[in-house]
Image (cartoon, rainbow over all chains, first blue to last red; front, side):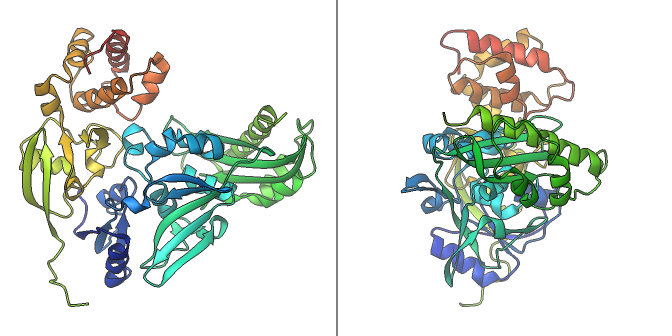
Length: 288
Length: 167
């Protein structure tokens, strides 16, 4: 279908973009890469009054390591993330996940900030940002604020962003030698949205798990940090010889809805399978 | 703020380069790039399939990289270079791929072919050797509803294996 009628303005600077967003009120939506927004407009699932094109804002593009933090500009495109040596070395979870994001033409346009702002529950980058305990930096005319990723995602396509606000940067704590990671998805076809996915990181003391962050995607309304599973994992030693705790822990953490062609029980089962694979991958990648 | 003209922003002035030719137009804000190319410039080689970013029939190059024409507004082409299958055919950039597609019967109904060629062009541009599985993965965002994928992969693999491939 064709998109509904909306107005379009191109911002030359961040300050101008924030003015445009503030001036229009809640009907204004930033247009970054457009790979989710324009699809929803073509399907008429979304009816903004104004698109503020932030595509020219080079100040929002770039990936840099600063002390112990990987800083990613909100307009950084997936193709850039895929090729980035800083990401490979300092955010290996993201490096592993980014290959699952769309296809080449989508990755050439789609942006990191756009993926977070859209907050599709099946998207990879929101889950990675939560798993890594990242921070979302948000700007408006009133100034900047930093939102922990865990608090940024509020529900199905819902975030902490208020009208007039724009994601400007994502900050991820850089990888450390005592960390291990895994990103896994179960999708019907490569590049499709995952039925269930898992972004998982653990902090180890030798082979003992000190802290685990497992974030499930696709199966519930937001990237879901699994606290019961993390509690059950803490203190265990890799490789795990016993994994029967996974199902009861996930039953506490995940309450997936039935969707056509996929029951809640199937989703929980897939989540358990991915959890076992992720913990095995943690062991394979353990620093030794 | 001064009150804005209520009609402001619904029409957007763009100045871009399409297949090497400078184009200046006023376009509706909501018009996507492929409708602009097809309806305004009569470049009908880029096709519309799903019109929500799934099928890849609308692939065009924007500043040299392949994008979904249906997920790009014409307004976003402002200041940029757009190349379509017409321009890349005329310049000879697709010669080797087109000959291989013909040899392998990789175009059946032909609807997906322009998109396939543009994505394959980017694959060749990466300049890396690729397994058939890697070619399939790279091309996986372009659908062929005749399901003629095998011949398409054959054609791309042949061009990829040839030294100094024509891309």
